[in-house]
Amino acid sequence: MAEKLDGEIVNADAFQLYRGLEIISAAPSEAEKSQVPHHLYGVLEPSIAADAGNYLHLARPVIADIQARGKTPIIAGGSGLYLKFLTHGPAPLPQGDAQLRAALDSRPLADLVAELETLDPVEAARTALKNRRFVSRALEICLLSGQKASTLRDGWETQTAKLAAHLRGYVIQRRRPDLHTRIARRTHAMLEGGAIAEVAALTGLSANCEKAIGVREIRAMVAGEIDRITCEERINAATRQYAKRQESWFRRELWLKPVSME
RNA sequence: GGCGGGGUAGCCAACCGGUAAGGCAGUGGUUUGCAAAACCGCCAUUAAUGGGUUCGAUUCCCAUCCCCGCCU
Image (cartoon, rainbow, N blue to C red; front, top):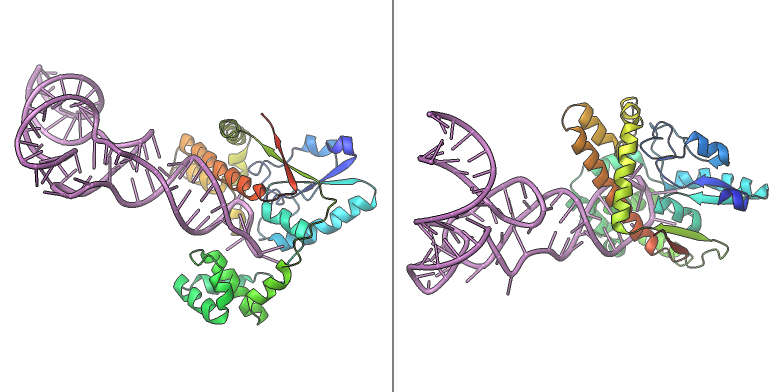
């Protein structure tokens, strides 16, 4: 596609962004990368924890540069939130603060909920209060900005409707059985293709990268806690669940056209 | 062949006379700043099979089949 459109590929996968996770994140191979220009693959140290905002700062200039050269940027990847930042822009909300998060993480959820309810009842009412992440972020916005998260969000939400009309996008769809078979094949190939050595070589991972599918599973196998079969099956299961969440996410991204690969 | 233990959803598993916990997997969903994350909903009218006891059994009894352990 990139060759036909005289395009260049820009990564939109949260984990392929990192150096050292290539195998486990199924990043493009050297051969693929030499075929057509690829951007934002392996550009971050796995010790740093990037977020969607950081990604946007990285991606915008790269995309602008491609366009300035008269080429077509082709954004590829599966991190729905990152992609949405690209298409909708960032909301005027404060960036996450590691120290504050650590402090919030040490408190009981009920405590955070109570504080959010007094600080910003409107936001509390529309937040999934069982989800610590969401409660914590809402609270973080209030504490960092000194304003109500609900107010900041409302101002932005109204602008999101007008999505740039020049965007064109596709979601690849496969039937579940096929998807599951391919996942199993992919996992097997990873383990045969150096994933174990790759994980063994990783040190000082950010809490973020620690979550990459395969890291925990392969470590457990190397430590002798689980056998190879179990390791493979756990990675498969985690990948299947991830793929399902991607389907859910992209299903409501109406500008994306489904392309069935039966 | 004998003795003992056991057969509960795809897998693991609890309850054990009053009408099937939980976990995993699966499935649907939430989602603007940890997102390959975090969280939420759904998911056995049915307990190896057949018979009996009982107002009522997955739970008690009998038979059969199967599995595991020990003995021969």
